[in-house]
Each structure stands twice: as C-alpha cells, then as structure tokens.
Amino acid sequence: MLKRLTTSQSPFRPSPLRLFFSYIVLGFWSIVVLFPLYWLLVTAFKSPIDVSSGPKYIPWVDFTPSLYAWNEIVVSTGVTFVTRPYSNTLIVGLVSSLLALIIGTCAAYALTRFEYRPKPAVIGMFILCIIGGLIVMAAGVPPIIAIGSAVILFIVLANTIGKRFKGTMNNGDITFWLISQRMLPTVAVIIPIYVLYQQLSLLDTRTALIITYTTVSLPLVIWFMRDYIANIPLELEESAFIDGASRYLVLWRIILPLAVPGLIATFLIVLVFNWNEYVLALFLTRAESQTMPLLIAAQNATRGPQWWNISLLVLMMIAPLIFLAILLERYIAKGLLVGAVKG
Image (tube, rainbow, N blue to C red; front, side):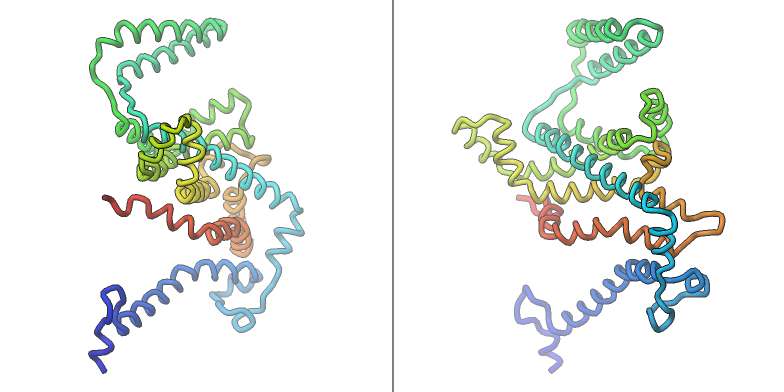
C-alpha cells in the first residue's frame, strides 16, 4: 500500500502521496494570497465600531454587515467625489498604456530587425546643440532662428569633427540605456518635470499624466516586446518580402498577429504600473485630474485612517484589473513564457 502511494506510474505525473501534499501546499498558499482580498471585501462592509473594536472575520457571525462606507463614499460626498478620480485613472491609464504599447512595439521591432551603430560623440554633440539652442532662445532670440541655428551647427559638427570619432554603440547598448532609465527613482526627476509642465501650463491636466506615464512605460514595453519579437522566425518576413510585401505590411500583417500574447501581457503589466502610480500624480495633479491612488491616500485624515473607506475604494480600483486579468489569462500565460525555452 505504501509503495503504491509513493510510486509514480509516469515520469510526467507525481505519485499519489506527493500529489496530495502538493495540493495541501497549493491550497495553503492560495489562502495566503487571497486573504488580503477577502479582508478588503469584509472591511468594506463593516461599520467604524466593528473596525476599531478588533479583528472580525466572518459576516453575520463576528459582525453584522453595514453599508456605512458605501453611504459615506457614494452618497454623502457626492457622485463626483469618486467618479472624477475614477474616470481620470481609467482614461490616463488606458491611453498612456496604449500609446506606450504602440510606440514601444515599433521601437522593439526596429531594435530587433535593424542594426544601429550610433556614435556616442555625435549623440553628445546633438545634446549640446539642443542645450545651446535653448539657452539662445531663453536670451530672447526667436525660436525659429535658435532651432535652425542649432540644427545647422549639429549637421556641420557631425560631418566634420564627428567623423573622426571611431567608438560606436550597438543595439544591445541602446536597449540597456533605455531600460536603465527605470533605475532612477521618481523623486530624482520629478522637479524638472514639474517645472516643465508649469511653464507649459499643463499642471493638473490629464495630458501631463498621459505624456509622463507613456514616457515612463516605454522602456518596459521595449524590453518585453524586443524579446518576444526576437523569437518570431525571420524566415516568415523574408518570405513576405519575396512576395512583394513592404516593411510596414509585414509588421501589420505578420509580426503583430503573431505577437498578440506578448502585446496583451505587456499591456496589462504596463497598465498595472500606470493604474497604481502615485508619486508622479501627487506632484503633477490637484483636484481636477486627481487619480484613485491619491483619493485612497487622502482617506488617512485627521481622524486617522478610515479603513472602511480605504477598503471600499481599493476594491473599486482593483476590480477592473482583476476582471481584465481573468479575461485575458490565457494570453498572459503565453506572453509571460516568452524566452523560457531557447534553441
């Protein structure tokens, strides 16, 4: 009997005893993972006295469910109290994630299928010319003259001094430079971003958040999609080129349909980052373009953390993401496994 329980009939199927213990471990881990969601759900239906009087786990046993938080958030404070931050989060998150996915996928395809050899010295000249143009513009020179002079100066320098430099970068260096932008903490760049949007009169607007979130998300999209596109056989594109297809037609008709799992997985990952972003929204928004993370943080008022309100708002915030994850689960699984097997 013991031998039958510990012996496996197939190398691809564990023994009954090992299978039994595996289910126990998985069941325990599922409880650990899902318990925070359950705690949010029950706390959203508690009254303040039930929250402050100690942990209560089971409705109608430990406590009587209450709609206190729902009445305070949805009814007492007015509809716009939740709908405006919710719509801001929805619009900014979806638009910025889609823009980052479109631009990043095109960049990832270019880094995968083309070979670039830029010279760091020429890039430095370009940056210096741009800085010089901005300084001249700030001194009162008309923008057209300042920008035109900077462009002409760069062309002259690139075709004279720039040709003497031999050092070049490759696609790997460019990709690493792009992903290295995510290594900087947000607080290191938030002040210049704030000043820029202040000068452009874009503070407290959805446009500012969309531009910033798209820029911040681009390195992640390029990094993920570059690996996925690299696993698509090059022979498919070569066959299409022989049949007369253009590069854009190949990207639209061949690469993108084959990359759907990677596109969906990348989109959902980026959407989660943009949906939950807090620091950038804290500095760049006020009341008009406030997002849900700021509204949730604001529930820690002078009376202390309003845990019943926080739980309700968090549930409202994460519900669309959970629904999308369940709906797109099979695509996400395929997309996240890219590059797991080589050769």
